Length: 61
Image 1 (cartoon, rainbow, N blue to C red):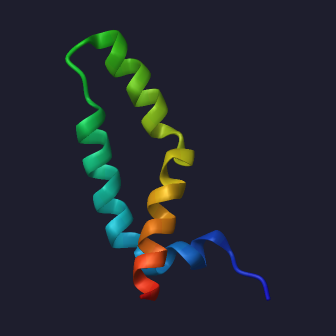
Image 2: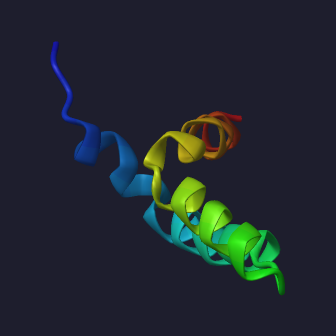
């Protein structure tokens, strides 16, 4: 059986959208260089793997 990443993410799209907004908000900095670095990090979707697993697991219980 094969699943696409989009079919796996579909049931948790709303919580992930909310997480991304909060994550961006918490990673903001008033220091311009730090804000630029954090923005670069936030744009990398790898930082969303753990939250995705948490939301998927929470939906199973």
